[in-house]
Image (cartoon, rainbow, N blue to C red; front, side, top):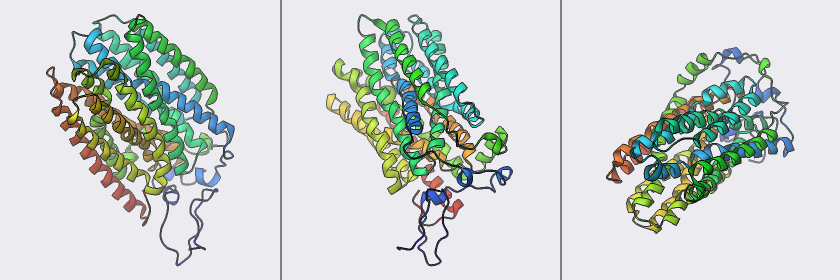
Length: 464
């Protein structure tokens, strides 16, 4: 209708609808502030009413996006290359330990990386962005240099430096780097686009780091010097990122609203059925979704695939994930954020089923390419999906951090379980079936979360 009021204008407020207008609200209208959920904030300054955004295409906003991209490249991107470590540890450096035990290194690192955001996200909400980012970056680089000093067969040394130290360092930076984008890009679909662009840095990192590590580990440079070289690269890029990222000075100050106590906020989240179903879906699906990331290179090796192609299997997977992590941000406005997440997670399960057919180079390449795209899309949509349920701009960091705890828990227990199911005899159908079943459960829970979310907001015709 030509005269129908538009939703989500630049001032962030929905104009009154005409009496006979078709009830077809968009997500911008859906994401209103729920003052009943947080009475203490009812009379305070809200992001929608008093927030003055930076000018479109401002240098500060786009420079911050570049800085966040670099943080994702160095953090989650490097963690995505653990398949290289898994293969190297199993065949060379930690031969006294089984695949399940070794996979605890990578899964613990991933868990800490994702879950510690509940602390760093809270600190971000309190305004400590720069101090958090500096601390995390320094600890991350230091831990990698400590990893280069670890000796063969000394499992505890590697676990402490790589799983604990590097996990904490990268994890401290993960959530604040994404949350800072919400200060510069306020509208839901703007956030979806810039967040998917930002997390594409982890895909590019996941493509470049495996090449670098494989070449260094299997050359005269060796394990120790190879890690020092990669740590030096991460140190430089992290420094550049810290120079680029800036808070939005026009964003409301924390003193303009009452800070809700941490546990009060958590209790409020746990009383929100759509949010509970959403994070439950994350913990289940993560157990299956990371299986190819950890074991595809080992699968290639055990199926007798040429070593050159084996070394590039993770690079192909993470490289194609760049496509998957960027495209959904632009498509989500057409099909919805939650619809996009449900679709991509379903496709992840279908592709993992395809791993039954791996018997040579063609199968490895096919799985790596397709799974990279669909998994990259799924992972990119998690952060903007979690922000859908934020009742106030000040709780975005908490919502993200608490949600990623459950994503991290799935990443923690999933790889060791699949490694145990794989056994030393490499029975591949067991972990494949396990992964697919849990992904299926995650899809069902996300569908239920979407249903309750629409009913809670009482919005008909809204694309979620």
